[in-house]
Length: 119
Image 1 (tube, rainbow, N blue to C red):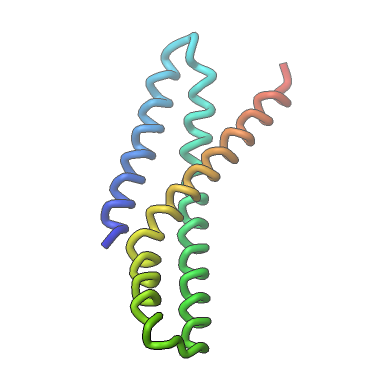
Image 2 (cartoon, rainbow, N blue to C red):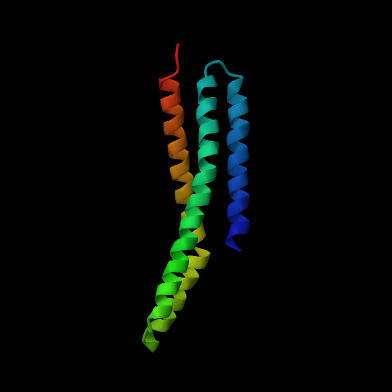
């Protein structure tokens, strides 16, 4: 259920970045920003995917670990609440962290390529 919202927002994010890159390409003063906008868009995709894969692996690992232990009856509602939070809130957090890290790495790569570009 949360991925309906997350994927919609992510697609709008990518379309906005790419449309912005095309628009600033036509401005002589803002043309260098186009490279960075494209780099953020490209870096966001693997960041989004890796963030959600990390969430999946982590959630499955915690679920497997919890099956090995028998929690007291009083802690079982807390376990259920933790599982629900992982399922419904975790994707938003993992996606945001993945997108931000991917965007940052995209900017770093674009900056390094611009800096080492022959004149």
